Image (cartoon, rainbow, N blue to C red; front, side):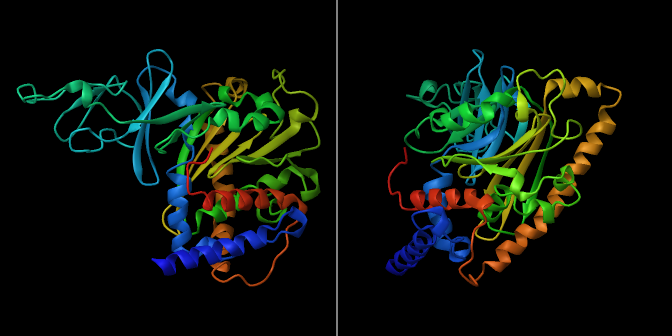
Length: 390
């Protein structure tokens, strides 16, 4: 056990040294941060079972009984829309013998019936039926409801936390990001049109880092995102923030992808042609454009594997132009574009993981990679936290 602590201390010391005190002196994270089992254990403890984790989009849980079932750090969870419009979230496990009560995915139910012994719960998690338990002495249904966990909505996304004590409010954490950057897009109104998942043979942090810098776009995404003509010098890093990071790029011209619809009167000036890339720490990635929204939740599966759950949503005015007749062809084209972008990223992310098996040198950040430093500083802070982060 002591050796394990010494190993983790050495890695955290190396991470702290790489981060330095200012961006200009910082270096990329040491390879051990991506490959150490001890680091992975600390991530599960201090990040994935403590922080706010994105489950999906609010628009997919619009009506009473609409739900999403998923896993956070391997724990099955369930979020359900209530009759009053609020959300409740629970461990997706029966209070009797803990069998999972809802199959992972999206759906709509007024009652959730355990497939094991048919214990039945309403949307509020209240036990309403426990077959053959009525004659059991001192059995009180009111004390056998589903176990609630913390839930919050931000800008059209649903987040939950497994922390014993509720973390500081997500909306408060992200006030600057909302007020100064993404709030103007009103992305809560975007409608989900694609949902999928992608396995990747890499550490989860490799994907986060790849997503939050656009230095690689003109090389890796020559057939997709780079076709709009933006270069690294066209991107701007947003403000340094404790719980998120962002950067954005504005394309020239007034036609094509990443341009606001003519009926969009909320976006003004350059923002009508600007795409923002966001990471809500630790693992929720967003590409937000005037005409589409790409959301990715990155889930570790050990040190060298992960699952990327992703979705695409578009504003109502874009869907209105598509119409029912052309929807299938339009959706196939959009799906093809996103699949191509994923196919460009995946081998590079996996190459990043292989290359970090032993850090080959000191490395150096490009100015547009400032967000990588912000992410590394967040990790350092959270790795060293032995109590509930606020």
